[in-house]
Length: 479
Image 1: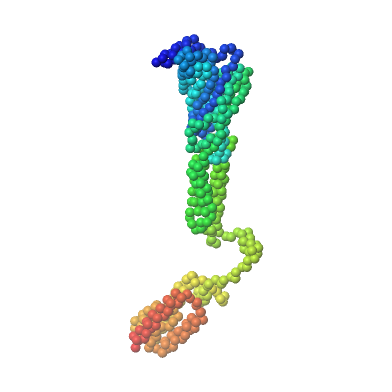
Image 2: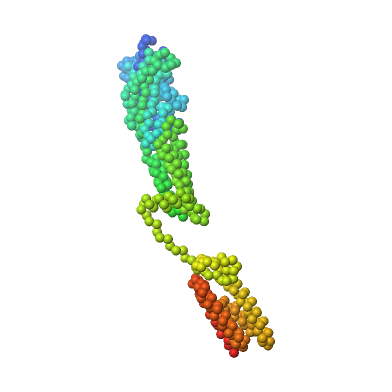
């Protein structure tokens, strides 16, 4: 209680006639020496987009006020007291390179006052300072940011600053997950500005911070590299695969997305371009070229003689010069499979002698059998009708069933093979004529030497079998 009463008396004695607006010096020519130091508690954020550094710091300030001295023995050995900072004179030290409008300390804490007049004031503050960001080596970059403190109104003749320590106090620093402080030093400077003739002192603290790249390596660098490697796999896909162009376009879109992510992080400046941005840009160019090459390869792959003709320079270069350079020999030409065809007399006459040349050959796909056989059937039907008219004149009592049997036999028999219905006519003359026709047709068939495919030969054997069977039935009927 006595100590509390002593502090009351001390407060009344110190601040009864105290003027907080005048400098605490006995003479106006004296200079107030302010010892200044900085302690950083946390590196909150480094905004690359807006080029700002947000920090939580403690401003350590110490000066001497001769009007606030007392004898501890007179006040029950009270050596120090805490007084509100609004009641005493304090230097107007601000952050010169502030970026959000709060230049001075906003939270006015109490000051520590000692019996010899030494005032110690350590207010906390959260500052957003301007910082020039260099993102050339993003995300493996290292930034140099500074915080410049000094008096805003007092020049060097009124207030002079003295650095408490050449390094920033990191004892209470809370580690950041994105940035690491490599070094932080403070230097004393004096500068004359254009606005004034006086010289103003300041203490500038330089922070060397390095980005921790693990997050960006896992989520940005490695995916970009893997997606870029997929571009090479496009050329390993076969040309018949329809996913070559799709894969190229997918890789191009993925790289575009990563480039957009980087542009949201880095500042919108034309001074520097990050290396990763250049890498993505050139990779996108190469992917675009790979798309063009793939389109060309697919176009060449799907070409055929029916759709494209080989250019003359391609033929001369790849078939003429390149084989000679590589000491390659042209393989022997293989004969093309073909079917020799000797057309009938009717077809030769209709074609105007087109097939008169010997050794004429047609492919197996040519359907010559149907037209030639139909023409021969029509010719032999006319001959048969003429023979029947002659027989009716010679044999008036001839039954028409016989002629029908002859017609049926001819329809299902092989063209050029004689008829078995001659026995029903009962005429030796008719038999001799038919035998002669049969021999002539067999000779013609042997002379033709048709080279038919196995399927057609098998069909003709079946037709021959049916004709023989019908011929035998007609012979039995005539008997």
